[in-house]
Image: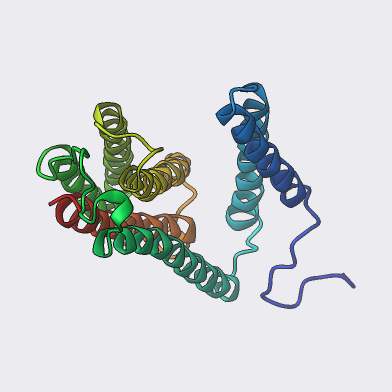
Length: 263
């Protein structure tokens, strides 16, 4: 009893996952470099496997702390919300850099690319074909994840599951269409500023869609296991915030890069 908890804060137990995650990230990065230089593919596979294992193990520990040990008290949840807000703010700055690279090249085209934008010889995408379809998909998914969240807050667990299922499927559909679009691109990543800025901005956004889809899939699994309650579901709330952020970034991409930047 001398060590009984007398406060609402969460003192995290020592964990191997931060250092293991860092090792996996370094291995993955080195593996990508080796893969891009046609040396070997397997270092990347090992790094990705380490990251996958760390993510599953770390998520398991956090779910256990939040759902079964009661560690995520209202005071702790306030800190988690601030942390998620700061994380999304850092993501805004990340994408601002890629948008600025595109705007700098398009608003001030140099003589090296002919002084015009898009550069001569670049066949851009029609924004009202696949990009518009993906825009509709993401806007719809933003609606369904909001529906899932509101259903949970009102104790409608069936609506929660249906909303999450639809959102995850829409996220997968977006990724599939993005892959199709890349396969049909008439320009490449290297050799021109248009391809470099286009693929960096849309590619990182696509990576965020994949991450968000995984995030929501974990929430869907937890919903089926009954982990969420109307007053204790920050994991789902954070996933919804992240997904809305991904949607907003896509709207900027669609209007700036596909529509305005390609005209």
